[in-house]
Image (cartoon, rainbow, N blue to C red; front, side):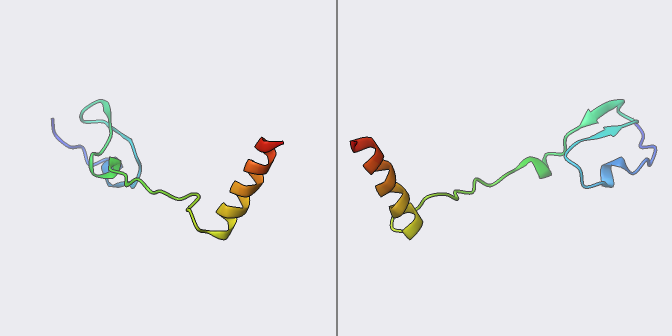
Length: 60
């Protein structure tokens, strides 16, 4: 399998088509993702207001 220098592998995309391999390629370096936890945090003002509002609706 010889590279034909199409430069598709140099693009910063998740997948690309390799003409030399005659197949789609998914680079392994770019597939690693870190899990980011962003959401409600106990003690934050918005969280407490939301929690109290939801509890109030459930009790009724």
